Structures are given as structure tokens and as C-alpha cells.
Amino acid sequence: MDIPAPLVAECGLTDPAGGLAVARRFARVTLTAWACATVVDDALLIVTELATNALRHGTGRPVLRLSVGAGHVRIEVFDDDPAPPVRRPPGADGGWGLVLVERLSLDWGTARHGLGKVVWCALSAPSAELAG
Image (cartoon, rainbow, N blue to C red; front, top):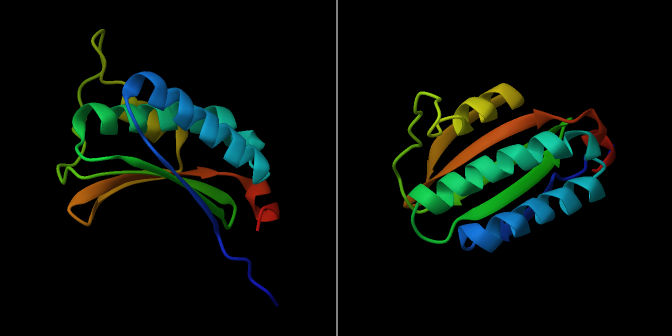
């Protein structure tokens, strides 16, 4: 039996103004091509939050990575700052990003990666089985 390799695609993140639109477009096109259209709306919200945090608080050149396999989509954002994200109380001035990520995903977390970190989450995508 052949077991398909997971699909992986990456996109470099640039300035917050135009870079977020590029990241969202990349995520929409990639996930739709991978037969994961059912998670596109949630994925776009998460991509926006994680990419914004990396561009605003991280260092280096952040990278967005999407992968799919075994009925889920994984969203990862890498940056060169080793400090984990700080959860702020939600309020009028923000603090909703990680709460949103937590509510929309099956699981999420952060880990050291090279000199920096990766913030990741997984979304259920039963149609992802078709992509491999």
C-alpha cells in the first residue's frame, strides 16, 4: 500500500500592509488546491493572526508553512525571536488573536525552532485525505 507524503507549501512574509494579503491569498489558493476548501475561512483568520504577530513582535523574515495529511491541515509561522507569544487579556485594544486561534483549531502551540520559534495549529479537514 502506498502511503502518500504530506503536502507542504511555504510563503515568506513581508511587510504587514501587503504581506498579509499575500499570505491570505497563498493560503486560500493552496488549501483549495489541496481539496481543503472546508477550512479556508478558519485558516484565513488564523493565518492573519499568526502572521500579524510574527511581523509585529517577531524578528527576522517570518515564514508561513501549510501542510496537510491524515485528515488535518497544519498552519505554522516561523520567526527568529525565541520568545513565545504572550497571551493578553482580550479587550478593546486587542488580545483576541491567540484566543481565536485556540477556539478555531483542534490544537495549537509553540516550539523552539533554530534560533527562533514556530507557532502552529491544526485544523480538522476530512477532505484532506483526498489531497495526498
